[in-house]
Image 1 (tube, helix red, strand yellow):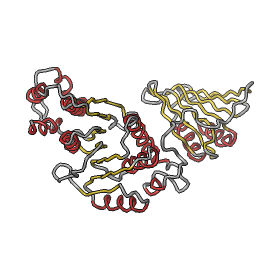
Image 2 (cartoon, one colour; image 1 turned 180 degrees about the vertical axis):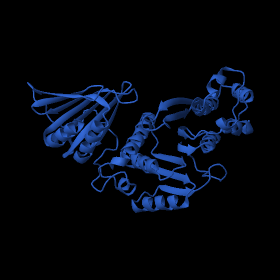
Image 3 (cartoon, one colour; image 1 turned 90 degrees about the vertical axis):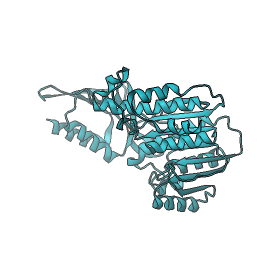
Length: 384
């Protein structure tokens, strides 16, 4: 009978306006999935909303992708209730625990209409359809400036960073801005930041991106030259040991610099009294490799591997936050992106105040008790 539902969906897709899946069979499934037909910039699309634990997650699908999605969801038999809406009728399917399917059809007194746009769509600073050529070369946009479906999470993630950046720099009144990006990788973010300051904020920009991979650095330099981004350059460097730029810096970016590379990036910013720091830490393995029971409250989290892993990641970033505060920074801990899209979703946004007022002694005591070391703490100890 499920094949009959699939057949009916396939046949009704041209006139399908909305589909709703509810009553999930498992606690790990979305509570509800709504798929609605609509238009965006003249293109026919289906907007999908998945609701999990009172949070809604959105994505856009082409007609072919929507058909595949509907078929797979039905065939998985994951939901007990399926409602299909055309402009004039509702077709409801109810699937029992034993797999028996009942079908009913209702004529709608108020026709369902195609949405002109997705009313939950994010109002990004850099939007789909905007002519940003470097995003084509980086594989985020198609040649028609549409977001590549597989890169939508990346597009959303970096726009979220630009949104946070825009808020932090709302009162930045200098005509020129200088940036260092530690562990820039393929430099999606670096190009976005350059574009934001030069094209949106209309400022002179100087950005250096550091990375270990020579081929990636060479490719990014070629793109910067291709688009006339004269203030953007990339350098092969190991941030844990190489000598870095001595120019004045307005802010430091460290997006997913792996493990202790984040500590060296933060230490560089602290040594130079950099006014702004934006760090999204990654792969916090250091504490986990050495931590042991200390006859204290943390022992509870060390009995199971998953608890231990998450504890050590959070403990690492909590210590980094306390160190930044001790060094005279006001720190905000933000959710960078929804956890469903990336577990590496914590951002430390710091602004220098100059008021150094907190002792690091409690952090050293915590280290001694549980037998671990934290790199940024000892880098700062060496400077005291």
